Image 1 (tube, helix red, strand yellow):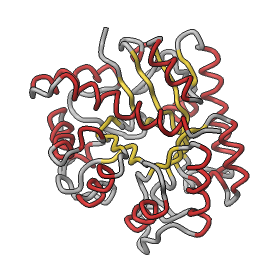
Image 2 (cartoon, helix red, strand yellow; image 1 turned 30 degrees about the horizontal axis):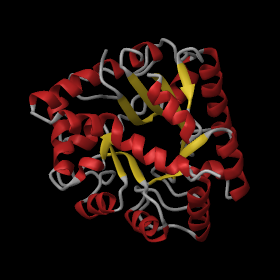
Image 3 (cartoon, helix red, strand yellow; image 1 turned 45 degrees about the vertical axis):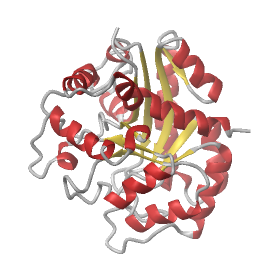
Image 4 (cartoon, helix red, strand yellow; image 1 turned 60 degrees about the horizontal axis):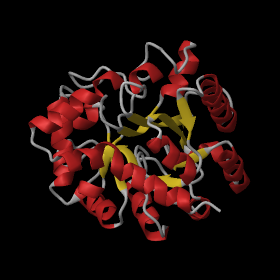
Amino acid sequence: MREKIFDMHCDTILEMMEREQGVKKNTLHLDLERMAAHENYIQVFAAFIDQKGISVSPMTACVAMLHKIHEEIEKNKDRIRLIQSEKDLKAAAAQNGCGAILSIEGAEALEGSLSNLWMYDRLGVRLITLTWNYANELADGITESRGGGLTDFGRQAVAMMEDMGILVDVSHLSRKGFWDVAAVTKHPFVASHSCVYALCQHPRNLDDEQIRLLIDRGGGIGMNFYPQFLSYSGSCGIDTILSHMEYILDRGGDQTLGLGSDFDGVDTLPDGIRGAENMQDLIDAMRKRRWPKELIECVCFGNFYRIFAQTLARRK
C-alpha cells in the first residue's frame, strides 16, 4: 500500500462537468481508483470560478459544481468520505481510504454578501481561495495591475471565515492582499497551491518574505506542479518540484510544506507526472534524496492534516 497523501488543490470538479465524467474512474488527472492505491488520500476539491469564462452568475456556477461533487461522493460513499468536521477528518485518517474536503477558488461566488458564506458553509465548504487571478469584492488577484489589497468586505469575510472554521487561502492573491490577510487574521492561513519566486520569477509564486511569514505563523504551503510556476522554460520534472520544496525546507518549513498539485487545473504537468498515479513516484524521489521518513510523512500528509484539524476544531 502506498503512503498517505493530503493534496490541497485540484480543479477536477469543473473538468468532470465539462467532460461529463465521474470521480470513480475517468480520463482526468485524478479519480478514486488512483487515489485508493494509497493507504489514505485526502483531496481538497475546488469549485473554480473563472469570472471571465462563465455565462452564468458566480454563485450559480459555484453551486452547480458543489452539487456535482456532492452527487459523486454520494454515488461512491463506500469509497470516499466527505470531511466537514474534525470528527470526519479523524475518521477519514483512521479508516484509511479516500476523503474529500470542499473548497471554493474565487470568492466572487459570495457575490458581495456575507450571508452567502453561511450558505456555502452549509454546503460543506471548508476552505476558500479569496481570489483567482482577477479582482473581486474581497481583493485583487495577482494579475491586477493596481495590486489592491483586501477591501472592507474582504476583511469582514476573512474574519467571518475564521470564526466559522473555514480555512483562508491566499494562492492567487495580490501581494498587498497577502499582507493584509497576515495583518487581520488570528489563526494560520495557507497558500494551497503555490511555488517559490526565488527559483522561478512568476508573479503567482511566493517570495521569501511570504514564505517566512507562513512558516512563522504556522501556516501551510501546498507545492504546485504547474511547469510554468516551477521553471523559466516550462520544462521540468520531479526533481524540479523537489528543488522548490527543498528551498522551503531549508528555511525551516518542515512543518509548513505540503502538496497542492493543481491537478486538472493545469494544461501540462512535469515530466514523470501524469496524474495521481505518480504521487508515489514523487515520494520515491524524496527517498532517493535522503529525506527522513518523518519529514516525508509530514510533507505528504501530516502538515495539512494538522492545519485542517486546528481549523475544524474551531467550528461551533
